[in-house]
Image (tube, rainbow, N blue to C red; front, side):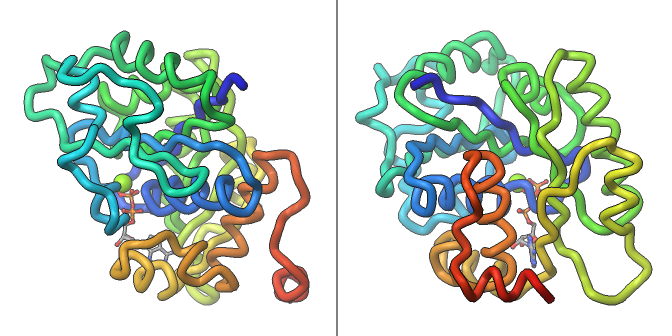
Length: 251
Ligand SMILES: Nc1ncnc2c1ncn2[C@@H]1O[C@H](COP(=O)(O)OP(=O)(O)OP(=O)(O)O)[C@@H](O)[C@H]1O
Ligand SMILES: [Mg+2]
């Protein structure tokens, strides 16, 4: 195994990177049987632990590993079936963060996993650049608003300058009505395919309140079906969305 490192990026904050990263990782692990490491790469303002009730910050975190507090190997990472999660407490002192250390930690995990998914930070600062630079591929998340689309175009350009290609765009918080950017517009400005259109959906907020991935709490919700499609695309398998899911995709 030599795990592919995929970072989930948006530029714009709050559009759904953590939601997509968590659910994509959970779906790849449970629906597609892949070994997945999900890392909170939102170095200074991590949120992943707020979305997973069973994640214990007193166990090993990215910060502990990067500042050399622990000898690390895959066995000490918190595990949920095929999904391993490395949360972060957040670096208070940016000087303690080194992109080269980050890269070597992630590369040391590569042989143990099929995929390493990085939940990246908002903006286009050092943390975002670090996440792009350690990644093999970039998955973009856009909301349905013009500034969201503008920012993914910037991220795509920066990524390409660093020799990283974009896999595609996940549109999130899509509403049926309103003056929103359309998938075809996103494809035109980004030059990338829209892999999924996740609706603005209460299954996402309810699952967040429960502290479990939406794809586990509400596996048949439209949001979950869209995320499973992305996981299928990434794993190279037909989407595991069942008959109901296939029927719902017709409408
Ligand atoms: N499809 C959706 N429908 C409804 N609510 C959503 C959806 N996607 C995300 N949310 C909610 O939007 C908020 C922001 O989502 P999330 O934390 O995933 O964004 P983010 O891009 O990771 O933010 P940040 O830039 O701060 O890291 C959360 O409260 C989340 O539950
Ligand atoms: Mg986030």
